[in-house]
Image (tube, rainbow, N blue to C red):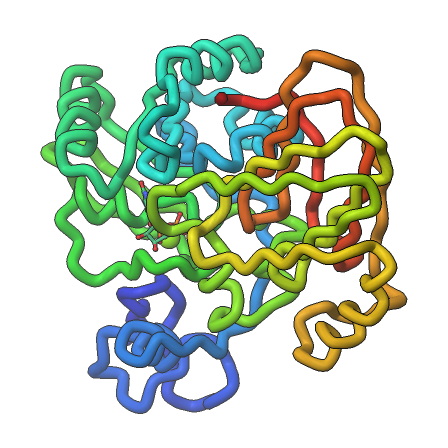
Length: 340
Ligand SMILES: Nc1nc2c(ncn2[C@@H]2O[C@H](COP(=O)(O)OP(=O)(O)O)[C@@H](O)[C@H]2O)c(=O)[nH]1
Ligand SMILES: [Mg+2]
């Protein structure tokens, strides 16, 4: 009898310990990996790269995106994923934003940046907020859709929404990337809802660090922005991941939207080598010869947002010129800021 793991959707098997879906007994609901993730917070699975997902032809897509990753979505080839499907964009995790964020302005900025005729609506929500989920449920009912698919990057909140809609008790919604391995379907009223496999974010912290490490780096709760000012030749370490140095006479003002436990350390640029060696000992920087350095210089009067991989965002008011060094391959990008 074929049986799927209720946590990740992979086929259960009791023969090969090191292969996906292994369980001691086929009477179990979960594979060994989901079981240890659920009960001990430990993960041993391999990360697979997923660029596309199977979506039934008739399905309306609910494209779920973490608000902190919206700019990243735009540079990803999402258009080929939603092609031919009526799509509603769910901007999730808005509870991460500081309470003062102007959500109307934010929605407007999002709408201005979208250009795809398949996207018919944009909804901002937090899937940890019951009333946002209730509103989403009413929206789905009133739309008369028969089949919907939750699609989006790993860790964007698809399974959390799926579990709410279908009252599924088994699927795992954990801050673990690439957890859902096969599409899982259920019913909400008479609407068929499918939770799809998460699209892989390339060059993310999920790729470089194990679950125990990256779960301490990504934002989980409301962010308290942190402000740091750097004088000329001053350097700021963000955890052991990003090294920002101001080369300009003008003081640089940096506003970080990261999780509240991220460690910042300010020093002088002459001490960087020392620090890098120290950090190497602790093992988070991959290798000093694998450090990418990029110089940023921009036009005046624009507020910029720098995506520090999955660790969060950095807001900077230009003009400025500074460098960011980080592990080669971590995704660091400059965009115009989405919110203030
Ligand atoms: N702060 C916050 N966390 C969320 C929200 N939605 C989901 N999460 C968390 O994000 C992580 C990934 O959620 P999950 O539903 O498994 O994402 P999936 O990989 O897209 O299926 C879990 O730790 C969830 O609790 C949200 O709206 N706000
Ligand atoms: Mg999932």
